[in-house]
Length: 332
Image 1 (cartoon, rainbow, N blue to C red):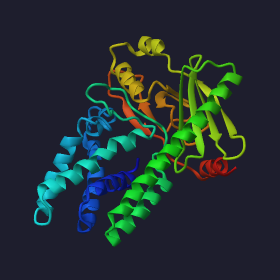
Image 2 (cartoon, rainbow, N blue to C red; image 1 turned 135 degrees about the horizontal axis):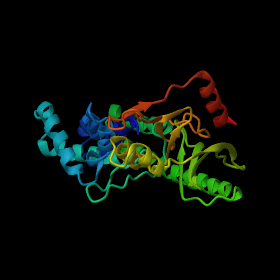
Image 3 (tube, rainbow, N blue to C red; image 1 turned 90 degrees about the vertical axis):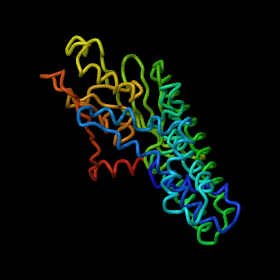
Image 4 (tube, helix red, strand yellow; image 1 turned 30 degrees about the vertical axis):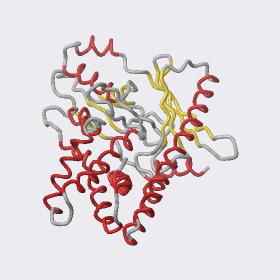
């Protein structure tokens, strides 16, 4: 999730180890900072290899195995500033708990997290909360703020309960959206080979369904409702990337081909050529509008020099028309 939500989750869990109400503020502060720390992996990058940051983001720093070491490193840093106020052990326990929330919260989103590194390189993505969810963040923030100012750690525990309940609700919504997507594919006569349903940004009401069938990627938007049938905004399809053609065009030993394989692993196989720009291979799990097939990022291949490094590019510019169309899908 976004850094602010990660910090709040870390602070909330750290509050469970508070033994005196006087510790409340310092424990919440340590937990908040520790909850942010795992994302320092974004500093791992190389100008010679633009895909390196994709491979290392949400990798070892987010795994279960790394939690004790990550918390220990954070506590060493914070101890330099807090050693006159708290013992190293106190700082360590709050740091480990705060750090430990990061990978789990990120696994609730759709990006994918290496929770089981180094034993497995499967990217865990439960798709039950948006990458930015204001309801989750504001709900947890409300309880933590009151706990901080009134020095009542029990109120922070209510923040944990609220966050867990919201994530569980996201799982229920995800399964509802999945059922709608499966029914839609069946009506089309499609056999689903792989399906991803995920909430769109800021909410868990409007969902994007993306599935593979018959060597094509299909995308639709699903607006869930409480007491009535969902609204389906049907999208289109695009041919899945043909790796045989890619290998014959650029060579199986070319940098272009190998980088495409790396990007495909990152994209969970939902890769195709970008409409209007055939030199860009996009990740079609994401689009600015949930029923369209315009990727928000991808890699650019130089057809004249396939041995050259590929470039990672973003296509996230949102114009007023796109934003208005998104709001229209969300509210109707």
